[in-house]
Amino acid sequence: MISSVISNGIKGVVNIPGDKSISHRSIIIPSISNGICEINNILKSDDVMHTLKAFKSMGVRIDEIDQKLVIYGKGLNSLKKPKNNIYLGNSGTSARLLTGLLSSQSFDSTLTGDKSLSSRPMNRISNPLTEMGARIKTTTSSLPLFIQGTNLAATSINIKIPSAQIKSGILLASLNTKGETNITENKITRDHTEKMLDSFGANIEIKKLDKKKYIKIIGQKELVSKNIDVPNDLSSSAFFIVCALINNNSHITLKNINNNPTRNGIILALKKMGAKINIFNQKINNNENICDITVETSMLHGCEFGPEYADLMIDEYPILSIAASFAKSPSIFRGLKELRVKESDRLKLIVLNLQNCGVNCRAENDDLFIYPTDKYETKNNVIKTEFDHRIAMAFAIMGTKLGPLEIKDSKSINTSFPNFRKEINNLGGNIS
Image (cartoon, rainbow, N blue to C red; front, side, top):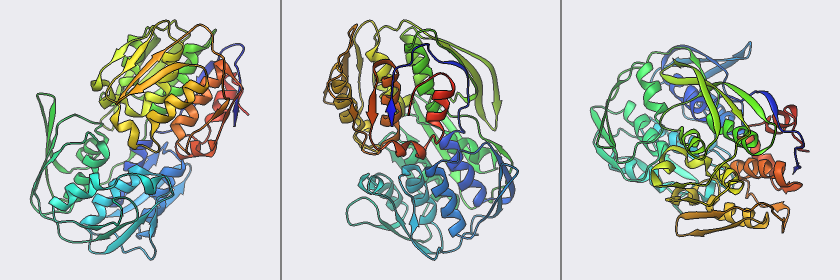
């Protein structure tokens, strides 16, 4: 894929796809609930489709009717042993959430993935599950995972790594576990799982105290299905927001965007940098905060963002680094350790590709320093992505200012935003 300069900015209403995190959970939770669930606006990306196929392989009836997904759930113990290994492609969310769910089932299963997913650490979910008595085997602390389904023991788990995937895996394991499981989050992470479990009638209590979250869940209570309207994805919106901010004569509108306060760090960060972002039409749907957003070209200034911002937007640092490259002063992003264990070592790739684009930047330990200038001279227009969709989309936006940039392995974008290139070009972009 080649991204080239936009001459007259981007304008119009952006068609943002459904939220990826909520889409995964909109398949998983109704599949183990009682009743029929109709899902509107689910994201049909590669990652989400792997979750869908996984539950079909375990005997769940899932139909597509009039653009809606319809799931016929039959309860906590209704899943069947799959005939084959469950292949999850590049989806870390699928892998970690299913590890928790399958640990408490009555059958054995094996999770596999592509080369990228198979290099990501899975002991961060298998270790706390082992505290509950889970039987999980792996030879390299990564996929493939061999899960021997068993009766788990309710316990208290202190989550040391800030990760919604770890928390969600434990919650899903707890659903089918007799007794009271207590989870402590030392840093609050995105809370889509607990919100949806609550709306489906789970026996769950949540308390927040001293920047920690305490979750109590009493297992073996059957869930009751209800319909889900998936809001549009803020993480996917971020690429268009930054594109509008850094390109002259831009003005865009984004509608029905998920503005969950546990993951809206990108909006807070960009506003701190001086971005002209207006949030309106705020409402709540399925326990999630929803809003419309307008964005226009802005003069950004650099900022220092501490580790607390990473808890709210770890996935958005690649595109935030592009915004910082066109600010009027330097920026420092601190506490980016988790960037090193995403679909790629994102911190390494951000620095490599920014430097190839002529940006003076460096990583020191887990901190990123960016020193913008008035004019960049591209040293190497080939962007290395290591099949990471967020790196690919972020540097496609970089190309709208510098272009042309050749984005390698751009098919990775299909894992989260299949129509990304089409949407950019519909607004006046130039990506081929």
